[in-house]
Length: 255
Length: 255
Image 1: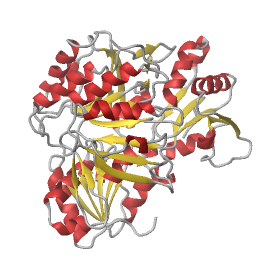
Image 2 (image 1 turned 180 degrees about the vertical axis):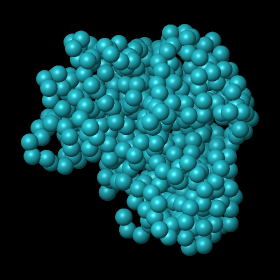
Image 3 (image 1 turned 30 degrees about the horizontal axis):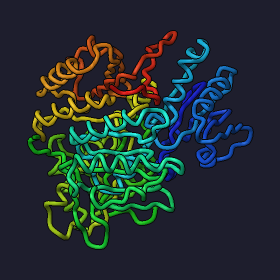
Image 4 (image 1 turned 45 degrees about the vertical axis):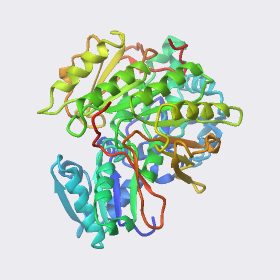
């Protein structure tokens, strides 16, 4: 890498070191300042002289502003995110802060570095559930009305997409995944393969493959990625292991 | 890594070496046999004694069967794919071949290794276009009827998703992207930000940001990823560069 960017937004992937890209590693190494949610900063190697600005998970916009201020002050800043920063992570917060910030911030050299998102890690472990067209929906209604989420769940069923649900629940947000399952159960076949992938790539990784009818929405927490199949998605049984989940590339004629 | 898997399905990302994960590199290094589309194999370092089985782009299922046969014969095989093998790439073909193949294949130790997909690379270069809910649709009707694709495009508009279009065109498949734009122009606002990202991460990378009304569908080819915004997607102008594309995390009340 030549001179590091003034501000980078870096994705560490889901937690396994083998999924951290060389670019992400180099940007973190080159930064004078790391900004991020504390557990993500803990995944970055310590380097003498490098400053760390750890924050709580709920303050994305404050964290983004701090990073932009530091960069405008001449620091070389890496905003450290889990997964892919572009997928329900820090990239949008940085550009929201940029949009509302001082015009000078727009002249900063900003570099977003993509990473492996939770949906992709879950899919890799399950087989090939994303082999057909798919959508990704965050169930968090902290920043958007529940009516918007319902509208998207309905559209996802109508389009027969494979559905990846991010942020299905948190300690204080328990109802949404139950409501989402209730809605989807009314629109999709009960035998649709449905997987819960928790902490994929970490030591406490767990996977379960059920059907839309049998899955317990209460099993999802903030570390869970939920995948719900299309009408084409099916299981491949195998000896000595959970079945693979396959959405074939070939689709039948639609209704 | 301990003993390499009998069969791995590995994603090289979009083309930039900094986006190839350490896991992908290690799996390729450890394999006795590499199987893949010739241009992807050309991106793997040569290793003495390692066999290469290059094939044409159109024969995914044959390629998958060859890889499974080699693995069943005791070879350590890596199927090399561009992008993320789980996203419109080789993982589905491998599990389709597995499903229809000899039962013994199901006892193989198979490992899918995720990678950076074209949509993520394009998003990283553009800013944060995937900051809200999104969907990914392949416009290739080689394996699914056009009616299914139309149904998904309609649903994507109805759900106000950001839309990533893979495989918008090929040398012999030119009509689909025009039909898709005609359909979406009837359902979405003409000023919706629309980006064409070509060969992101390669030396001949190019990006253009237009509106749904002004973009020329004929500019898309087989190396182009097309991103069409939601109603929330907007541009952030900046000095000396193309505008950033932002889909904010915060969404308004839906209709």
